[in-house]
Length: 465
Image (tube, rainbow, N blue to C red):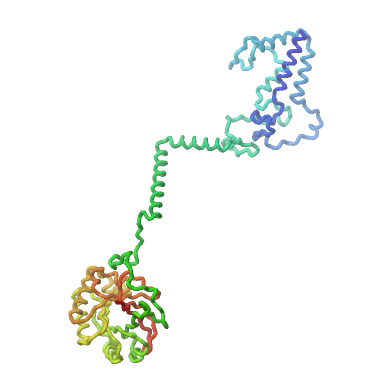
């Protein structure tokens, strides 16, 4: 009998030694030395015990209580030990265990009848029911702490609903490969829904199209058309090549001179009107002015009345006497072929059969006044107007020319102005930007010429064979 009791003691000691002895470690953290996160109630600051309570005898710990109970069991009489040992031996060595049921939750394996629990059995049962291992310490303040239901297992990084993340909890250390595998699984699970799958495929298709278009654009596979400064009626093509090499354009004492094969291939001229008032044409000729274009008249931009320039008769007579080659221009505001022929007849009348070294220039421009009568003439009507004027002038034996800047020239179709020389106007640039042929360039409206008190327009005529 004593042998049986000793065997039972040794077995219980080994069993107890394998149980956790710390309330501060969870099973998942045993052996790692990491603190188990306490619940909210246990995290609260413990109230300080009164001085009187501290002087009282401290209660026994769970392990001390176990050792004391073990000694009490050893001192029991032999008959009780024998009965108890037989009972335990039957339960541990194959006796028929009694199934735990709702009516009898305290039933234990190997028991056929309910038997009173000893102190040792109470400690073992409390230990098996306690999640943290040993039962709570019988501390007066801790015994009063409310019980907290433990929620179902959660991930290490997700706090329970309504509670803040417990910063003392050590997160699980998943490898990057595991995290990537979880991410891919979640993505595949989401793409299994038809709507999300369709959206994903649509987005990928759009990105592919954009990438292909970008490659084609950057590689020159597609041509992009930036808005040109002038409409197509200007007759400008990307392959246009000017007949002039503007690298040979020189600025000599504020005036442009063009050279071809080392020889001068240009002439310097001015155009004047009543705005320059009285001109001393002798001084003009002495200032190396090669030619002059004189305004003969104009049509009003509001009522359309035709006027003769106040200084025309003087200028054409005085300039001829000074030996300066001349041409004339008319500022038109014609809106119909009939008005254009009327203007041409007016010019021919006031020329009086005088011979001209330079053309009769047709100058048709929109005015700054929004109500200008000719501001909105269509291209078709502009073609008819320029043709009617020039045809009438040429029938009188004079050459014709069309004046304007890029916008003015763009009001005509290319075919309509192809038979005529162009007098191009553009200020403040070193090289003209026109993408069409021209024979004269008005490059400034603020030149200074001897014999003229007011600023004057300065022109260069290109002479090439």
